[in-house]
Length: 595
Image 1 (cartoon, rainbow, N blue to C red):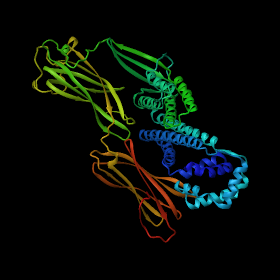
Image 2 (image 1 turned 90 degrees about the vertical axis):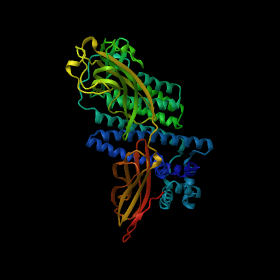
Image 3 (image 1 turned 60 degrees about the vertical axis):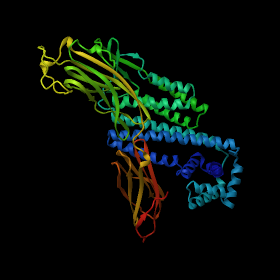
Image 4 (image 1 turned 30 degrees about the horizontal axis):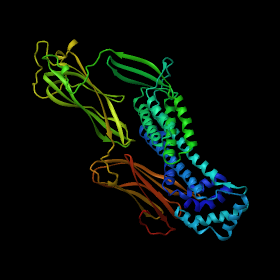
């Protein structure tokens, strides 16, 4: 067991360096193991994006920081749960977790005289430690063994370490909310002073999260938090109509009753804080669902959901009601027939995915209609999806069937399934002049044009058709990630290394994504990770391409690791390797990545 094999060394180093030293030893010694390598990659990128967004605000940078912060929250939760499960494993195995000062000194003396145990050396090597680093560790213990003061409790340390990563996830949650505020909180206005307290339209989503926590259901907790966060992200970045300096917003809701249309405008003073709290809850939900499901973690979640509840208060600023009752929609609308006058029926409304961007799904609404009789004049068509509207002005339509198509609507692409819905409103009238003549241009087939004023229906001839629709779409992506190949090539010339990405897309659709490349570089007596490049790439079907990523000039001989990630849609491909910079003179050549 890897954790048990390293335990004695961690205990001794922990006694010498206290908690911070053990944390550094544990993470550095295992950073090549999945989540730890991702931890450093995400952390470096977070810092760079924060600086970039602060210096040059843009929606693309803000969106990228939101995505990276979310990755950080999930990564922190994953590491936190992993540490907790390691502690449980140690306790169940019966491994001794507390050593007195005398016992630690005795262990250190034995390492000083005989070296590290073979099992420990083997596990350190498998964790990525070099022989030089292992020798340095032994020498450090030998030199410092007389400075051990007090015992060391590994259980308390690992428990605190697991909780520390929850705090890391919460820090990412703060940066996620900051990114949203930095980009979208512009043209601020003074908060309204009027309005009565009202029920938040999103209270149903809140209750779903609270119910999952109350029932201690990890799966429901995670899915309900993700759903609510998706709703609020759309609200804050797409649907808010006014932004206020305190992190508040104004937004509207539109509903239809048998008596007409109701529009309500709300002021939510704590909208941004509520979003931040949701992201904190996501870190907890991810850790709990990954195995850190303790009474203490559920108690923390219960405290956090109460905080969110206090942030849900809204005020109703205004409410308006339109008493014109629309004609109800049925698949076959005989009631819309105006006697012998021409009329229009909406036969079907469907939703189709129209494309994919880096982090969003694009879709359109299609309205299939039929004109019965000679001709109708359609003044306007309103297509609603969520809180967005798309408008058409078809004009004169002649007898026959046709299709109206909206422009692109979009939703965040962070779910395997999603619900869309709204309404289609059509205002039209018979296309006959007062004298009964049909507009010129023919009577067969649907045609459109600017309606002539003399043919616009007025008064009682105007008809409104209203169609409600909803559809569940499932994110079965036409992009197969297995058909995207990504490798990094390092070509050395002396102390300079040229990095290139080789990409191949064998999908039948284009793939759009971002390449990030990182490399270790000398920094004084230490190594640091530097971001070499971030570049966006669009790969056409069957596209085989080489992308230049940058050149690094290494200031001294040594072995340096590099790694790259190609993120596209909800997928990612990565590659890593190592370059050896020999002492001069050295032949230049192409180096293959280390797998």
